Image (cartoon, rainbow, N blue to C red):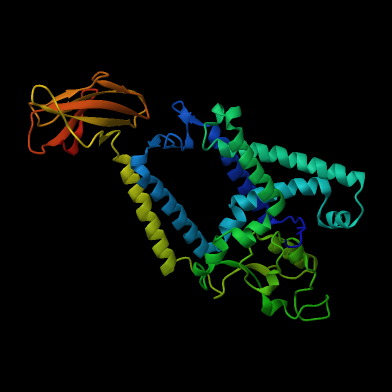
Length: 418
């Protein structure tokens, strides 16, 4: 295991920006599971029932292409933001960073900042240290439980969480404590794949956090060397990843800009210009419009347009027909029959009465043992068993006709009936 990192707290404009973004994103995360739309969760991935609640839309297994478009759009947006601003996602929006900073804030309030924690770790185990550690772990546990409940609320309606849901809550609580309380930077260093392929997304015009070697070197004490860097090591002390930004661009850097805030404060005290550590490009210029950003933006626009078109043109009532048995049955009067399971999919926000009939089969008969029409509840799937009886023929095609609330639904092709 790597050595522990005691990140020093630093204030500054980037810290304030990161704290504001964190507050907004975490507020959304904790509030969204409690929001309902027409009596159902506003955002919910219901795995047991295979549904995705997304605002006014309820997506069923037959509409997994919507989920695919959402994932592709998120990936493309990440690529676009990376090509423009480097690892801005990691520094300002990644849950790993945001929650780790929240856990570190509690640790700093209780055990003190970097220097005090390092002194206590090297000293004897006192009662004060045990009490502080216990208080910190208790607060972490409460935070982990609340986070576990919130994350569970995206998979199980949060108002319906019961004792039966405790394994899910316990799992997310354990992961939260382990990840944000103890592992932290090791997740970014060893397990996050994003740091590995970021190099393929960077180019000479990508905005990254870098140290100005030309201005800073050679390092030394104040007034002893021409370089601006006084080797105070504050940029290393404030880094939550434990790296030295002066060593160049590194895959461990999450672009949190803490080193910029620390260095700017030192430059202010020395009455020297800011920017020794700052956002810059390898080429020295800042071009937003370039081939790769155009491609990413175009792909994102196509995906967004496709999603909007499919969302506005989706059928609110659909049907999925499965033939129950491969063989047909012969009736006493010389006809043949086939069993079908008709899945009626109601994507509306109100119940609908659906009447089933056969199309282009005047001599055929549709028998629904449980009644016809069938009432389908809102945002649900109703399975109906039907029997199709018809004169014996040479592999005819069976088509169902649906009428919902006096509205005819497009014909559903089933295939050979024998």
